[in-house]
Structure formats: structure tokens, C-alpha cells
Length: 328
Image 1 (cartoon, one colour):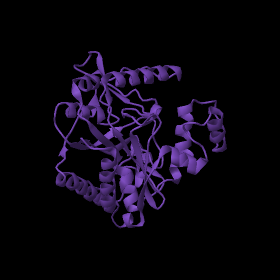
Image 2 (spheres, one colour; image 1 turned 180 degrees about the vertical axis):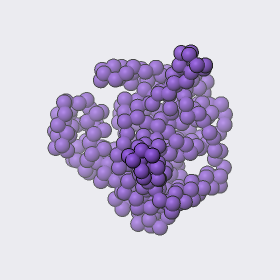
Image 3 (tube, one colour; image 1 turned 90 degrees about the horizontal axis):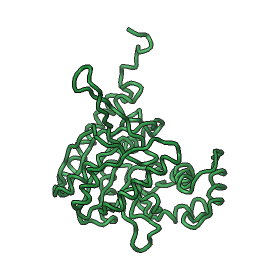
């Protein structure tokens, strides 16, 4: 036996935590069954990566036969693209609980492989989906939920409250100064990079203290796969949920326009080139599904491991995982 691995064969979560993990998974499945949302199971190995600048897809290679050239695939970072193809095929309200993999993510709240709960509701508003997310989170938190009310604030409101800056109107210099005050000493960054830095370091950690906090109306440049707000096209119909300074969920009123989605993917690819990142091709099957007709839907992805951390008062994601990446 290699002495370096004398004890790291053991799980980092104890047996009691793993039983609570199983119980929470069962409770979540009951939640959706009672609401007649269908559980689906889509592939973890996919043909196309995401083009998002901040999400890194892991590669896998398969040989059809020994000695043949390997075919390259990717591990999904979310089941979103496949689930939208099912929506376009007419399956109706659906959910999935699955493992996803995102490269370069490790820390107190991050493991490269983690469990995601993702679901879609047809014909719903973003406000109705927030209600359902809150209902699920309160079931998961149990007694801890009693200490938390709930509040819904705009992206602009939380920046003004926390930093005294209007994120839509502030100059690049104002954002740079705020980032430097937060300890960012790197090279000059773009507007979105600065906003995301400020949200992750200065704003987000202060949200959800004593109240489940839904932040909505993100900048249009951060819309990803969400629609823009018809009342203010500078904002996206997107929300995130924070609890005790931890981001738990990310929800969209889903974009259904294939041409607009392709343009966003192409913008991502151009930005990747500008930043020296690898150029990637968009998922043509997703774009074909959008062109065929995606129903009007709202969808959300919620981090199961972080939810369990909050429910159990755990300090690190390792405390709720059987085997984090170093022990996988």
C-alpha cells in the first residue's frame, strides 16, 4: 500500500452526513413528484462544450477500437442544453438531478464535480419560479429556514446598497477604483469582468444574511441564455439566489430566439479569442432546437451540495461529499 494513501481512501463526509444527503435527495424528488414535474436523465458526455468565458468544459476521449484515432467529447457543465432539446420536443415541465463537471473550480464552496438540480417550467413567470425555488429551499433548510425571511432586490439595488455604485451608469474608472479598493491589483479589466469581480468579492458575500435574497435584473451583457427585459433592455430576465453569503441558484426566463442565441455564442467566442482562451464551437443541436421552437419557459439551476451545506451548517463542500476531487 502506498503510504501516501493510508487514509485518503475514506470519505470526507461522515456516515451521518451521507445519510442526510440521501434523505435530502429523496425529499427533493418527492417535491417534484407532488408537483407533477417529470424527472429526466440526459447524457453527461456531450459533443459540444459551453462557450461561456467563465465556465471551463473538461474533455474526454474515446477510441472506437485499439489503435484508432480518439474521438473527443466533453463532460457537461450543466444539463441545460440537453434539457432544452427535450422541452423543444414537447416533454413539458421537467427536472434533473445530476453530476456536472467544471474545470478549474476548487475551494471551500467549489469542487470540480458537483451535483446540480435543474428544472424548467413552461408558461411561468420568473416571479413564480422564484416562489418555487424558495419553497424547495425552505424544505431543504428545515428548522434553519425559520431564521430567514425572503427579499427580492434588483442587481442595481444591491450594488448601490453595498458599494454606492450604479452598475449600469458607473464609469469604467469608478468600477476599477471599487475593484482596487476590494484588493484587486491586476491589469485593467473590462466592464463585465469588474462587475463579476465586485459581485463575487464585495457584494455577494453580504447577501442572504437573515433573508433568502433573490437578485434579479442582471446586466444584459451577462444574460447568457436569458431574455432581455422588454421594459429595460439593459437588464436581463435573470435571477440568482443567495443565502448566508452563498450563491445557491441561477434562473432565467429562457431565450427562445435561435438567431439571438447564436449571436451571443459568437460574441463569447470572439471574447475568448481576445482573452487568449481556446476558441470553441457553439452547440448546433441546441440552436436547432431553438429554431424548431422552444416553449416559453423559465428555468433554474440550484447547487445541491451547497444547499446541503447550509442545511447542515457545514463549513466546506468537502464535508458533504463522499469523495472530493483529490480522493475521487
